[in-house]
Amino acid sequence: MLRYVPNAARALAQARDQGALAHLAGPVTSKAEALDAIGGALDFPAWYGRNLDALYDCLVDLSWLAAGEHVLVWAGHRQLEAADPEGYRAVLAVLDDATAASSGRPLSVLLAEE
Image 1: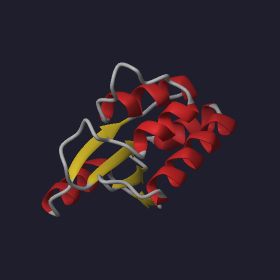
Image 2 (image 1 turned 135 degrees about the vertical axis):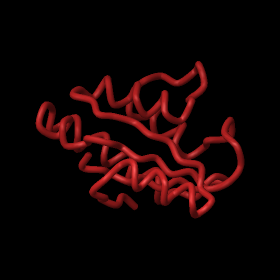
Image 3 (image 1 turned 90 degrees about the horizontal axis):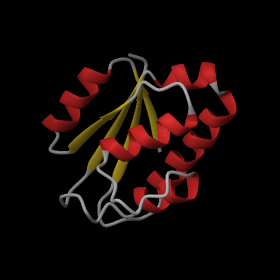
Image 4 (image 1 turned 30 degrees about the vertical axis):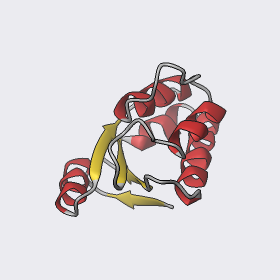
């Protein structure tokens, strides 16, 4: 499930206060930048293919990261929506699907306005 939050810094702090491992991505203005930013924020392995299928595969795995809940905060997500609405919807769909899939390392995604 995706959640919208007003402020990335506050969302990161709250996630950490709740014991989650927090990761920050964005802002970006293209789908390719989004794929790279998310991969970088979550330290995806070298085999990450930088496409939507690979994004999903990595998001539902996260086995290279420390055990526990992970929270991805995407700051300025609306910049991609404005620049590439179709790419934005595609990335959001993958993020939403991946957060719903079961995994040994649960993932939440927060979409921050700033």
